[in-house]
Length: 544
Image (cartoon, rainbow, N blue to C red):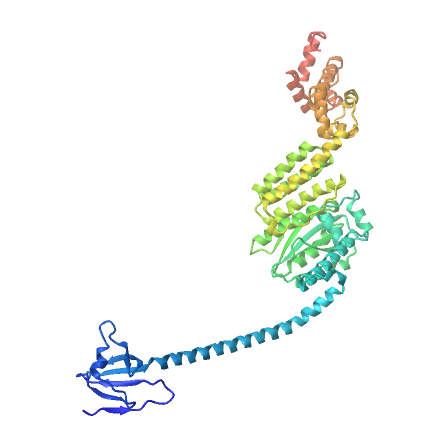
């Protein structure tokens, strides 16, 4: 049988392909003088390894693989020296490692290059920062610590400069309005007098308008405000001032004037502004109520922000329910301020708890919550500073810190501090004899305006301290005591004179005869007229 031979190509693995027929006879093999036997080769393929195995020929191990042709029944057996396979794999590993190493070196080079390029401006920045501080402080610090220290020092100096500027007598216009808008002014002067000292011109009335840039384009908003403010330059009776608002995108336009009609051109101009600016127009108030107009403008702005189809809202156009809710909140703040003025610790605690309850249950808008908190907090802080404390005002609470429980705790803490001061002052009050107080009442009971507060002011006592002291000494409240005196005197006049009941009512401290009659009947069980008639019938008998 003829056996065909062939030669392998160079630069390739030494594959030895053997072709075997159906009788396991070799019909083709390589010309490398291998002595091969078809039967021997086929014995290497078992059921466990039907297509590959190993075989040793002439002391050399080969990897042997089998492929069969279904068409002609031929078998193709490939013999590859294992040593050559391992050698080829080793070379491939070496080439791969060399390539990885080369890539690594290139990356390291690029990183070094980028560091050198980018460090140059950092180095210049570092040198610039170090010029502002003492270099001998940095001998034991790393470069990062040196730069951090330098910039912290610069920031600290900047804050000090800002604080000095704010505390300077020639205070800026913006800070002046921030004080009055947030009711943190401790001066007893009127706002117009205070403004005149700062070189600020104001009229008798005011209207605050708050602007919010929806697209965060502050420069464009400032440009629009300048155009509006330019209108006031042509009218010497209108004064306009721009103030930075609570949020970064907020600005407040304060319009001061003498007659409400004078601001109509401003309102028309504002309605022509772009819709990417939300606007809240506050109420027209007397100048002393500047903070009211401001808070009303904030409420209107909040409504405009919540409604996507509205970008300008006047406080007068807010629905009655929302307007009443806001008015109620500020009414309570005013009661808190009044109770501090009257040094009434019980009323202060009551109103503060009422406000906190509304904050927890009735305020759903974050912006309004922020305004209510800061106004109340600053009222308490102003009181503490008048008592001699050194407290800082709060002009805004970041939205991330608007936790209702924390706000409640802060208000209660400051409230308790104020109450403590009030009670300390009450304990230091000069003790007065109850006889002096009763004598004062006997002399002034016929005055309709007499009240416990008037007595407290007269005897230099707090409202709550006098109330407790009076009840403890007399055994009844001030109201009950003075009603008893008035009814006693009224009965005497009914018995001893023929004056009309209206006249007697005025003489004992009641301007309204109907009120006097109702109170008399409640006390005596009969009306003043019936009392007089009964007395006359009995000729001065025992009703007196």
